Image (cartoon, rainbow, N blue to C red):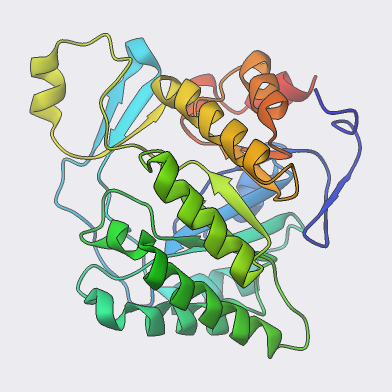
Length: 295
């Protein structure tokens, strides 16, 4: 465990009370920040927030695999849009660090999508502590195409330019897919270095179906969606370790994926993560998860 796990962690120009936060996807509309802060998270990432409200993918779209402590979801960025999120962010009372996970509306073609990210960043800038650029969720049509090196460079360069125009700059992080090849991950790290954004979140959910104990027929019947939870643990750690080694520990990493015990958290820290986020583990282990990890 990091030597400073019981003390504040200074990263991205922010002071985190401890290393454990809540990943995006749980509080999509920034409507439960105060309640979630009571569970002991040092930071909460809200969203994904899109420019316009959208209902997401057709139901059923969330499936539990309790034997594997896993979830498959294809929610599709269901949220009430940026204006509603800002209203809720204005009304929050907790001082917990809040990040905004920003994404695209499903009906926006990819050649027009950068402008949506730019507007989201500009409108939310005064109300959150950091931003996560989400181009890796497998549940939004065409989103993964935004991970292309040239498009990603254009997107992150534009966000950096807007950030530099502000009187107070906010940290920008990129959330990546666990399904990237090492070659594509190298391209992504090159773009991060070129644009100078602040860090990376590794990883998002996966389209793959591995480490599952259920019959293939049941998994096939569930259909498409992002797999999260314990089956993703080893791949998430592998990606974190690769990034840490490739960047010689110079790029801050928030580790996500299969963290449900103290040992899981330790594994991510040993691989090179500084901060951690939980999601599926929080659902299966309950509100005491943060305390169990930090105790």
